[in-house]
Length: 370
Image (cartoon, rainbow, N blue to C red):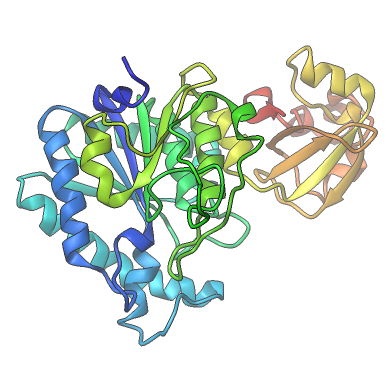
């Protein structure tokens, strides 16, 4: 079996499409392009493949109705554009897939939603149930409420995390670039890279950013998404949206990234890749040993300093005495509470302050070693 043919044999597939592949010159939705994508996905869906579509385009779809000339730069206007555009985008997909008698369902996610334990489980259950019911879920970041601190940053990374969340066989990232090249595609002599077997094969590849006025991603974000997905055992393909039929048929188009990790769900992948630390906890060598090698929870006794301002439930980095980040986790105390607890055992704290203080600063289930 060729690397590209793995895509065609996938039982469960995540497909991500960028804003630039769905919009016309004026920034509004190009219904012909959206229809062509929907037709291709519908064919595979009807053939038995479970598909989750991660679609950008909400902000871009709101540009024209709001009278904007380009994608807004400030978060508030982006959220306003997303609020207007999300309904239009979903309506367009609903109409396109209805022609194939396929029901779609909207799932809007924020990074904060799916890093907390119960929310992660809820997101997974929702997607699993939609797929079981024969629905084609359409996922997007919830731009209307996401703040700059809790954003995924781009839908390429979101798609990689969704592929991991639902234990997908493959991930396809569609954009306006047909493949990864060993240099700028416009440069004479640039060669397509058909297969990437590991990060070492990218050492000599020049990687650029986004060339679109309406998109936020670029080849760099797609390679980062491929790194996240392949580390979770998910084969990943990068190609142009107009090549979607060929890539889903397993033809030799685009660039395929082969898995370097083992498949299997773990919320810790989300903690590592979907969160931005709100603060830092500096710990002693004993705590580093307990966290990294003994797989223990973080207790107050091992913490020597608290940096930043955060609330309970926020993601924070855990650093060794030299400042190196060794882990990330969801903290059970606020930055205001913690300084008075440092260096003290949980039993001592429970005795002096009450039983509610006999808890971990970060529970092992909410911690990922980096």
